[in-house]
Amino acid sequence: MQKEFKTEVPFWYTGQCQRVDNNVLILALDGEDVLLAELVCLTGALLWTTPNTLNYKMSHSSVMPMTLGGKKTYVYIGVGGICGVSAEESDAGTLLWETSKWQPSVVAPSPLQVSSNQLFMVAGYGSGGALLQVDRSGYKWTATVTDQYKPNEGLSSEQQTPIFYNNMIISVMPKDGGGHRGKLVCYAPSDLRSPVWTSAADERFGLGPY
Image (tube, rainbow, N blue to C red; front, side, top):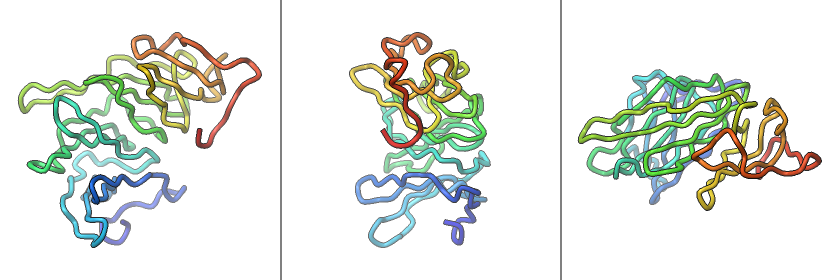
């Protein structure tokens, strides 16, 4: 990645989980010229690239496959914003939409799809959470942040990507999450500020995998 795509090696080295989809590898390179790329797993042959016109830098978040507006999409958060890239064969690698309205300085969790056109995003270091709505009208795409708050005001996470289960979002609150800090919590996507339930006061958790 560093040699072929001039990817800048972060001081923490790297934290991205590679995405394998139908025997191809999708990487967020965040290089001088290339943002995302797809390669054949067995040969390393390059299939497509997305130019890094957004000038994103690498953090820890991983590429997530989603279907938005009826279109297969790879969604990625870098340092600089969040974007959607086509995952369909006809225009694979094409940048469909982006927004810089939510851009934490460091982001570890990956974006989470909570409805046909809504994404939930969280990050640590005081970033909190945000809800993004992605709409499509023909060839025109829009991405709008419809809700945003600090970690002590609603559902958040510093490291773990929240889990979407039975139309509920489950997460571990960060250390700056107010009275719910460190608790395992459950929220409805329709109300990201009031928990449905939380773990007890003496049942608190930290960083690391679930």
